[in-house]
Amino acid sequence: MSKTIAFFNNKGGVSKTTTCFNVGWMLAERGHRVVMVDADPQCNLTGMVLDLREEDALEKFYADNPKRNLKDALEPAFASRPVRLSPVECIDVEGRDGLFLIPGHVGLAEDEVSLGIAQQLSESVQALKNLPGSFKYLFDVTAAQYQADFVLIDLSPGLGSINQNLVTTADYFAIPASPDVFSVMALASLSRVLPRWMSWGRNAAGLEALADADYPFPKPNLKFLGMIVQRYRLKGGEPTEAFRNYFEDLDRSVSEILVPALTRADLLLPEDRYSAAGLEATLRLANIPDFNTLIANSQQARKPVFSLTQEDVRRRGFVWATQRTQIANFKEIFERLAERIESLTS
Image (cartoon, rainbow, N blue to C red):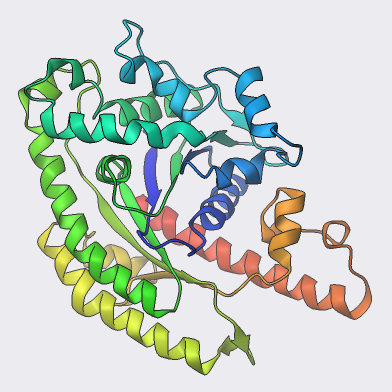
């Protein structure tokens, strides 16, 4: 049985996509089979896997590969066609065996309204009852087809019906954040939103119409893995003073606001599970400093930062020696992050 992890924050610009890609690659490198899902209409994760440098490359991919994206794979459910959803023919991620992608689609946002209506009215409008459970069903049958151990979902920022559905029906979620005032505010927002979403999900799972649907809406069993703090500068191997202050603010928001809210909503794992994985009370999964120029090399090579080579970065001498050390440090960070995910989800 695969484990589904949603990377979610209603604040943008916190490297959700980069984290999803790097974590997926590392888990596959450690012997797991991983399906990544690009559920963000901006399709940035798709762009990290496919070569989209040519003009209209994404449109050409859609034309040449019908049904090999999230929106088109869900089309039978959203168009009420008498055709059962089938596993997506995923994209093999070049350079990493065991890692696969369900590409995104820029038009996925068009289904937001339909899903929102379905999630409110599916009990009274029979034509809508298959929509709330369709995402989870599609991910499950695709994971089974690829014998996946993990399904990682890259979500857009925002609090719309698609994110509500995908977070609620995941097994676990992690919150990527940055040490800034906006991420602190986002944690306060999530402490209010996530319990409401879970309340909706538990009520939806009890509706007869959704239980009898072609794609039954599952009973939610979502648990919080932790927070991933990233995109900050280092000085002498430590975050600069300005960032350290926001680290403290984030930790305070987690311990005083987020954790109590998640506890009341039964969204936390047992405390000893976090301790066994090496997490402290702040429930921080990882601290990932800014990739700096390495992110551009990563995007060009379409591989994670920790797998970059001298050929990829095109540097020599002292500059390459410095970057090689940085790459090794990032590899250690993501290995530890993957170990913690393995421990928490085992």
